[in-house]
Image (cartoon, rainbow, N blue to C red; front, side):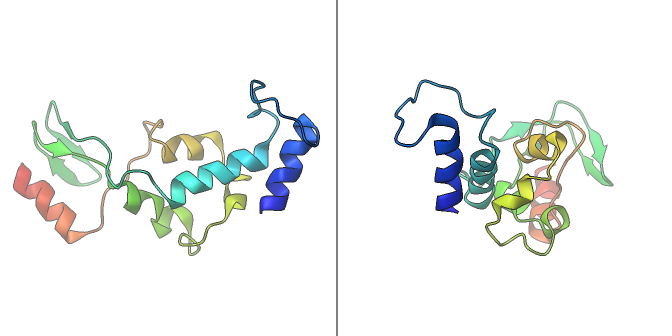
Length: 131
């Protein structure tokens, strides 16, 4: 992986170049996929910020009352086999080479149409208890 990353960067900047002011993301897709996989595989935080709902809603069969504290379990979302397949525990940057923009947006919480609810009874019980 290191060699592939170095080869791609050198291909854009040139061997031995030291130009950190030049934007690279458009020209280095493998480096970008590597960084996406690092963020998926080793999230900086286990949970996102806590929020309170402003109104009662039903989401995927779950009733969520108004003023209920909600959050996303980042670790579970990043290692959910239903989203990532049987290799969810493998560090594999190549998975991002075929990912659509919607998949990338979903991972980093920018897609409104995708939500991950926990299958954990403990999490579901705590949601019910806080309602």
